[in-house]
Image (cartoon, rainbow, N blue to C red; front, side):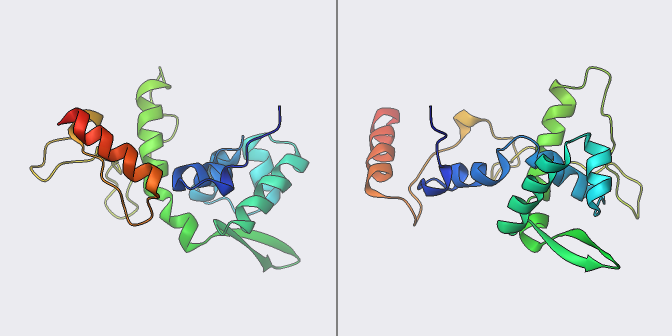
Length: 161
């Protein structure tokens, strides 16, 4: 069965999965958030084959998440603005993972460098400050919605009515 090309889909979440949904991609980003910049250090920390790491780094560079910059006789990988903008999503995934996938507690604590306080990724809140759950939200078409999405959401509105 051929692999689905998410990059051509209208949904931005699907397109982001084209970049971040491949095995190792988010773990490479984790290492970048943890301060890793050198190829050999990514390989050592992740225990990943060099050919796979090279492909993942190249894709993250191609999609503007990381940049490859000369550093001495070698190169370093640095987070771009786009890559840094993924940090809150990473923290939300880490919070979920620490709760549901870490029976002995978090492997790494992320703390504010200045205060030493734990960095939190709070759940989304409504205008009244109450945490939101999926049933608490209403879906409306955005400016990028096509006609099919507009019809789908209109039908949902009528059903939820």
